[in-house]
Image 1: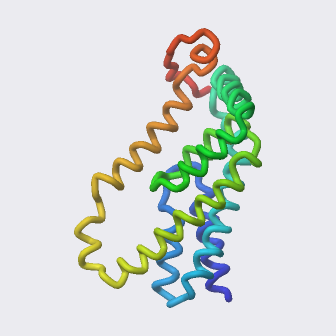
Image 2: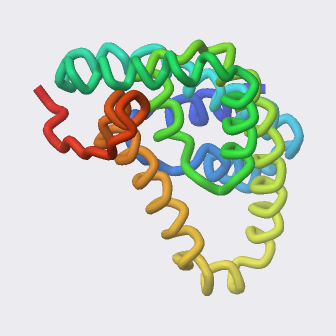
Length: 196
C-alpha cells in the first residue's frame, strides 16, 4: 500500500515544479518496474498525484508571477485569461488535446495560473487527458523496460527534444507577446522586459 502512496507523492512533487522536470509517467514506470506493482493502481495513484501537483502549481504560480513579473505583463496575462474564459468549452478542448500530446504541461499550467483562468476549465479535462496519455506511456514504459536494449537506442530522439522545445516555445509566446495590443489593436508586439 505504501508503494502506491509513494507513487502518488512522487508524481505530485514532480508536477509541482514550476519548471521543466521529468514527466510524472517516468516516476510511475520506475515504481512499477522496481517494485513489481499493479500497473493499474500505479496509474491511478500517479495520475491523481500528478493532477494535484499541477493544481497546486496552478494555485501558487500567480503569487510568483506577482512577485517577479512586471505589473504590465501580469495585467496582459490577466487580460488574455479573461478573453479565454469567455470561451470555456474551447479552453477545455484545447487542454484535453494538449494533454494527449507528449508535451510538458508545465507551460500550460504556468500560463493558466498567471492568467488566472478558472481551475474548473483546466483541471477536470487535464485529469481525463492525463489518464489517457499516461495509460499509453505507462504501458509503453512497461514494454520498454522488458526490451531495454532497443529503447536505449532511441532515448534522445528528435521527437522528445522537439516536444520540450515546443513546450518552451508556447510558454515564451504567452509571456513575451503583448496580448492586449494584439487582441485589441490587432498589432503584433513582443516585450522581453517582463521581470521586475
